[in-house]
Each structure stands twice: as structure tokens, then as C-alpha cells.
Amino acid sequence: MSKTSTSTLQLAPVYRETFDRLFSGEKDSTWLPMRRSAMQSFEAIGLPGPRTEAWRYTNLAKVSAMPFVPAPSTEKLQALELEKLEAVRLDGIRLVFENGRYRESLSSLQSLPIGAIVGSLARHHDHPKVKEYLQQNLPLENEAFVALNTAFMPDGAFVFIPRGVQIEQPIHLVFVNDARQEASVAFPRNLIIAEESSSVVVVESWHSLPGSQSGFTNAVTEAFTGRNAKLELVKLQLEDRSALHIGHTQATVQRDATFNINTITLGGALVRNNLGILLSEEHATAHLFGLYLLAGNQHVDNHTLVDHAVPHGLSNELYKGVLDQQSEGVFSGKILVRKDAQKTNAYQSNKNILLSDDAVMNAKPQLEIFADDVKCSHGATTGQLDEEALFYLRSRGIGEAGARAFLNIAFAADVINNIPLESLREQLMQRIEKKLLDSAP
Image (cartoon, rainbow, N blue to C red; front, side, top):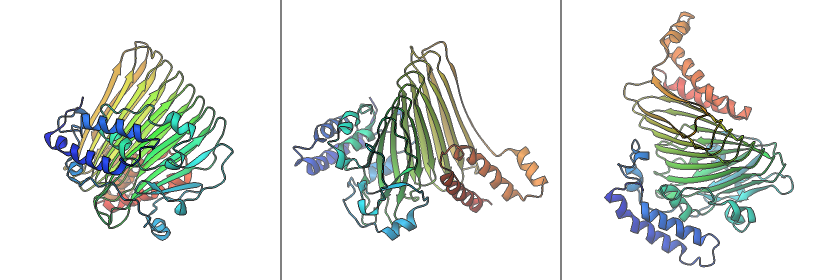
């Protein structure tokens, strides 16, 4: 049970009143029982308070102070605005969501193999696979924001890749938060299913419109990787410096399957990236990569849990951060190896560079092992740039500012190079290089 503050508990009636107003007329809705159960779970635990251990380094005062106004169903986003907004461009399938709702007119759906589905989750709410998988492995008891998303979710992406199908082009899910009229909360919900022996690359990019107030996105993605399948997920946080974003990704990986995820955080005022991965069958593999470049008063919290439930699992985790000015970073990563999970290989590394005396990094790598025949390691380092490397570059005629930027760019590239799409790697590196060069003293 999480510890909640008095002010948090006082908010519960506001959430309940909004819930009853929005959903009291949905007596025949397929999702209504699930919504009600989630709302009850949320009321039981409330938002995390200052004493909640999993949130001890992240102050949610900005979130609890916001008026609870679910983002309206608007279609104000224009194609030209979207074109100017998009920081990355990918050839392939594109689904656009405004305030968590599907915008068909702005989306680009190419032909798919027979049986494959890429579209609106709400429009497919009666699909057998949605009924089978939605909300199957998500924690509600101690995850207030997952419960809140489940209670209020309007829509999101449904990606279903049937057995044996290989999707060659990437699937780009574009999420735009429009809070220009008033501060509001968006609740997008995504369900990605890669069945046995299938493969797909999915890119989530998160944006906010210029002129938006402090919009809040509470997002959840459920990902299922079937036997011998390969699912690669890239999450790009590109919202502006006023945005609040709490996202939860929950992945299940079956026998001989591979799940790779890259979490790149460049924007946002307060960002929390929750990631839970369950290796549910033998010989499952997961690779986790994360990069966060922070400046100003940005606060980014990466919270990961890799659950090795069975033998012969492999997980490899690398998160890196560059923090400048008064920014704050958090990394809390846990590897759990259960009693029966013999022959597990699990590795975790968190590395950070502080460019300012005022920047703060809190790292908490964790191992919890109940099996005795395993290979596991974890570690975290936080410090300044390598003085020897800096001296070497300067001795080659490179100025100090340029040398520092060069080292930071190389540090970031170590993560970006794991993204499976060359065009996306190039676009992100251009953006990162500009950001680091512009901030060089």
C-alpha cells in the first residue's frame, strides 16, 4: 500500500465526481466494468505522497495542483501545424492522436498483410484480441496513474501483428497534447501485440503544441511479445518545457522472444518513465536503453523493473543522462530474479554526466535475487567529463567548448546507436548535437 498525503486524499472526490459525470451513461460499454474497478483501485490508494518510496525523489505537487480536467475531444490540430511540430519523420504507417483520441484525417495507413491491424483502440474495443489482452498484466494495486488511465482512457493505438507476419516499415504513433485553451489531462492507452514468430518496430513520439499551458499526459502502453517474436519499441519525449508526462509501459516476453525498448527523453518539465518487463517463459530476452538530456529546471525520473520469472532469461539495461543547469534526474532500476529463474543473465548500468554544480542526479540500482545459479551485475556512476579525454581533444586543436560538446555527443550516441531505424538515429543525433552545441559555454 502506498503512503498518500492528506492533500492527495482530498482530491479523491474530485476524480470520482468527474468519473461519474463522464461515464454514468455508458451502461452498455464494454470497458465500463474495467473502468469502475480501476476507479475503485485509485480511490483506495490515491496519488503517491512524499513518503511513497517509489516516488521519493519526484515531487508531484505540480500534478496534484492542476485542475482535473480530462482533455476535450477536439479536432483543432491542422495538418500544417502537425508538419511544423513533428521533430522526426519516418516513412511508413503513421497514426496521429490529439489529446489521446485518434485523428484519422491526419493519419497515414498503408496496406498491411492480411490479419494485421493498426488503428484506433476505441474502434476495436470489441475485437477478440483486445478483450483477451487489454489490462491483463498491468498492476493496479500500487500504481495510481495506471489505475487513473484505465478509468479515464478515451482511445489510443491498437497494433496487432498476427503469427508469422513481418512488418517491414515502422509504425509511428504520434501523440499531440493540445492544452492551448486550458490545462488538461490526456489519457492515451496503447495495446501492442506481436504474435508468435512475428516482428515489428513501433515508434511513439510525444509532442505538445506551442502556446499550450501545462498539459498533463498520463499514458499507458501494454506490449505483448509472443514466442519467437521480436518487438522493438522506441519512445520519444519531445514535449515542451511546460509539459507534465507520466507514462507506464508494461511488456510481457514469451519463450525465445526479444523485446527491445529505447526511451529517449529530451522534453518536458516533469517526466516519469515507468517500465515493467516480465520475462514469462524460458529463453526470453529484453534490452532496455534510455537517454535523457536535461537543462533548466527539468525533472526526469526513469523507473524500471525487469522480472525474471523463469530460467534462462537474458536482460541488458543501459541508461545514460547528461544534466545541465538546475535539472534533476532520477534512475531507479530493479532486477528481480525469482526462485525458479536459474541460469538468468541480467545486467544493468546507469551512467550520468553533470555539466553544472547545480544539477542533481539520484541513482538507485537494485538487485533482488532468489536463485543461486545466475550471472547478474548492476552499477551507477555520476560525475564530470573525462579530463584525460578532454585534454587529448584539446591537444589536437579543438577548443574547450567544442571538446566538451564532442564528448557529450559521443556519450549520447552510445544509446542512440541501438535504435533500429537508421533515419531515426540520424534525425535524433542531429537534434542532440544541436542541443549540446548550443548549450556549450
